[in-house]
Length: 205
Image (cartoon, rainbow, N blue to C red; front, side, top):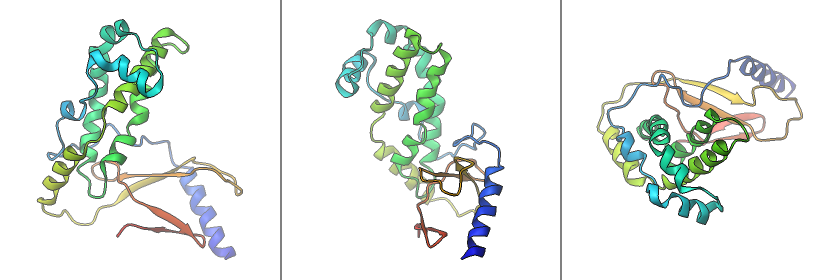
């Protein structure tokens, strides 16, 4: 057991030395089976944003802010929706995972405004409401999965993986997230793992 623990600590040290990576890099290779970004990006109508924001989160969005920034923000969101669509093309990536992994990108788009400013506050409420409005993408996901199922297999693939937080003490007792993406396409890959008896095992078939 001591040898196994030593090996795990050495592995963690190697992982901790890795540079910070994006969960979904911008240099990914688009897949022809991915749905159109505009379709993925369909959310609440502009005229209904403040109503849904108030109903779902108690937000105090102002229609004049939404009207003034709608074109700007939806243009910023479009690349995120393209990533969601490409995520749909990976076997075992469900639509929930693909939408969830881009959540911070939608909210992070508001960093363009000064902290504690009215624009930052309005933008943060707008981005969250828009993100909620993306809703379930079951049909788009199914279409992408059906499309890739008809493609010829490309052989064994490798992953680039890292852990967040990158560094943690031996007594660490908090959430640890393992990120991974296809080494060739740079599209994130979902997998379930359990830690039992000091070893990490995949629960995927």
